[in-house]
Image (cartoon, rainbow, N blue to C red; front, side, top):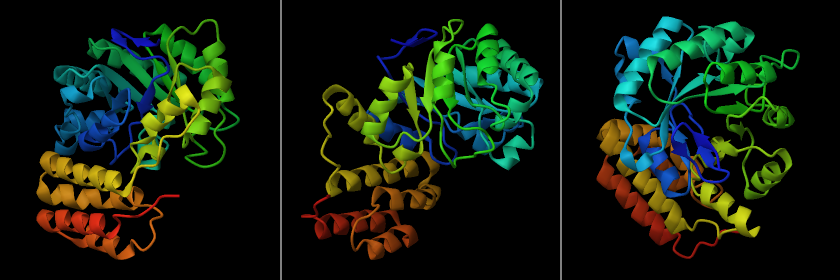
Length: 330
């Protein structure tokens, strides 16, 4: 069973990916409820933390029911990364994770995220700075390399372990691929099979069904896997995968009542954490995923994304419950 510092994880844990504007405390709470074993905050700018940016500071919020939980930071300056690690240390998550994988231009252009894959020496210096700034275990999430001609994950893994990184999650794409094209987990398996590597190695990319999860678990021999986009609006995927691992049978699909309860709880917890107005507005992006593919749902969805009063929204959920009381998922 994989261990990160003093954190003992179950055999082949399922991790929730840190996703910007998604992996906040209300969403993490839902995923924990439905079987996620280890979760991370949204990624937080080291520069934002240092200049006391409100949004960055709010992302430090963690709750005991989430544990074990990690806070993920990113940046391209050694001093800023060390200082932000010290700030993270004060809220005492279970670990600090460094994002060396985000492919978006605004992050890469600052020499952070996946941009660091072009300079492994800088990656090592940034990692050492974070380790210096915290008493917590430090882990890293990264990609295979900058592009298919510069896949350097083997060197990256060895050098990160050598400076004290205690677990590595690898997204099985290059930065150039962004989130498109084929994810190639064979590179991650090669890292895991390197006799020099002793830290846990987790795979990430394209896990969207219990069948694929079991196939990749058996084929690549990793220590666990991280799930991202497939959990958005569908937190049940964690327990579905675990059940399939044990039985090779599917759990019943979440019913309409299950989906309403999850979306309703997500809304309520978002309002509690963000405030009523912001909680209502930021929840709107999630409804499509909770109620994807449901026949005749367009009018209800329109009301969910335009209603501004929380009591009126709760009433919409009750109307959905009544309208779809006998709805069967195929």
